[in-house]
Length: 291
Image 1 (tube, rainbow, N blue to C red):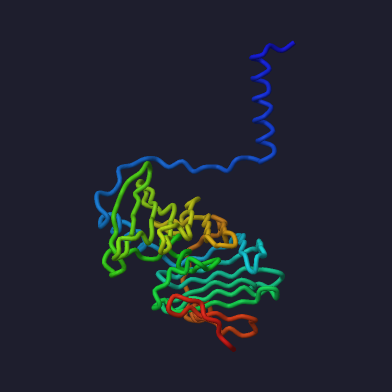
Image 2: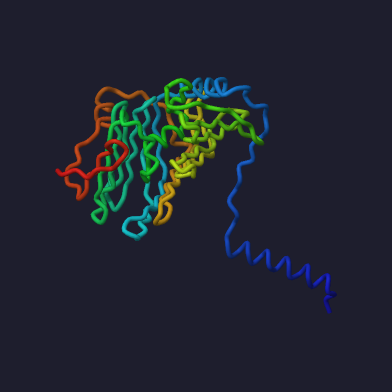
């Protein structure tokens, strides 16, 4: 007969086992080493800018899992993707959904951005101009957020968009950007040892996190540059969070040289033909267009 102490120990082990098998294997947590951080925001931004300048043209493929909510209905999709990037602003991602090789399309160049989701039950196209000054964190897959997550979008200290400050916590240098009124706009969590960005938080006017990007599994994309193989985007929405998880195959990440024909095809915004809904970003709002 088991003693009381033995019985308690047995029940504890049994309970942990049940939790383990019910929930599956716990996700791996990437443990980062702790290194001395940069001494000032200007020094930290200079390091990020230097890192971005080493980025070169590349291509990759992988998987994307998205979930977004429309009219109180969840739309989950899981599909293979192909990705091309020509720094600093040219970006193209296409996803094979429902036997349509371009069922999902995300792109940008130095002037415009665009996203389409083509399955019949959604059939929507969004586009706009960078000159409207949007971070576009409300999009399911925002070109700006992916470029910032890849470490390719430049971080400028003096672009007139607000002031940066620097703090340090554990393995991270934390860059915080504030607007002219002192409200927080954005936070970057940067691994102090290699200066790879690990998380980006975007804040709304009330000071709450409206969206965030989590980055992990860095893999080499050039001689002196690496990109995250896992990019997870979460958008806070009243009807439920929208999310996108891009997982690149590290072996597929290759440097490449684009010719003029490829640049014109990949990085020129296609016309929104055949979509049920077309939206344009104007003065901070999505405005439905008629075609």
